[in-house]
Image (tube, rainbow, N blue to C red):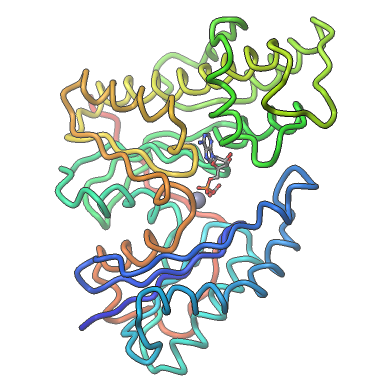
Length: 349
Ligand code: KG4
Ligand code: ZN
């Protein structure tokens, strides 16, 4: 029986998972570094790699224990090789190569963004291709045309900040707990999303690209113009009402922009399904608007469970299986890559 170990250390989550060759998930273990980075309001690369070094062995042990699998029964290791923070990637890669070499089994390098793109198929294996895949996280805001498990073409990307980064930056300005995205998702429910009228970015005609820097500037301007000072150590359940209103309006504007672009691209590329992935895909408003749009366009909707949206190792192992590369591997000279480029999807005439 094939038993694959997945390892993910590209940013600030240390994760391991065990999957069978048929794609059944036997275990998934994750250790978050939120507490390490919270005092800085963002990921500190040096601290992230050192924390992976400390956490990875016990996260792998936990994944093996949960799966009730002996390490000697593993048949391959799949590990994120990029894109991501170089130091963090090197910890996962070095560990994986040493483990695979010691066991005499293949090691497969996986592209983190492609693992996110294919995460909806873990729970919905019959989602039809081609899929228009929206990947939104702290580091990425991309739209791909996904023709098969091995072929994803880039439709558009953000010109500046990622969607999660835009949420996290306002959270930081408001002194909310880190990261801001999940906290704002909850607090937005207490606010009036129409209270602050943020306009959508004006892009060149025909452009599908995302842009989030304008809304960030508009929010800072709103605070200054109205002489609003966020509390320094806020009780997030008892914020001034203007803060809940700002959060709700800001979140709605981020989601409006994503959905507007997605709809435009769907009408142009005519996919068979729409899929959602990445940490921001946990967002309640985005999930419901995404489902609504898929329904309106009569397309299948691939929306993974939140635990498969944020960084995890299940998607890493699953992607290696989907491409069939767990059989041969990449050899023990496999290297890390901090950035990635994709072939562009040709725009339909
Ligand atoms: O995919 P991920 O775990 O790591 C990266 O590859 O970046 O995504 C983390 C991002 C953060 O920006 C975080 O604020 C955002 O996902 N996020 C959310 C929610 N949960 C996580 N954003 C909005 N609503 C959420 N519920
Ligand atoms: Zn990610």
